[in-house]
Image (cartoon, rainbow, N blue to C red; front, side):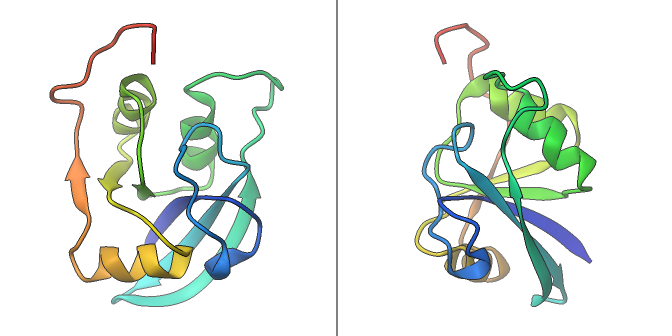
Amino acid sequence: MTKIAIPSMSDSGLESDVCAHYGSCEYFTIVDVDNKNIVGFESISNLSPEGEHNCAAPSIILKSHNVDAVLISGIGGRPLMSLVEKDIKVFAGATGKVSNAVEDYNNGLLREISTNGTCNCSHH
């Protein structure tokens, strides 16, 4: 089974819209996928335990939920590095509803991205 997290606009589960901004989304929808079938899901808050913005905070939250992959619309270099350092795979191109993003992932339509070519500067 694979645990997939999708930045979400609400806590509406599979019907939530994908949030275009990974780090500032209000929620993550975590979807359990087994053999390309959705076998469960939950919505979790993207609030940092410290209560302040930290580009690594979402990756810490997701790792604590044993997430294997994140489906994103867009992401900055430092948050991407934080996910990759925690062995969480990142796939770009997620749009529409959470259910659409999972379907696209299952059909191989999302592109896995790595830290190659990203900068580690402070303006992201």
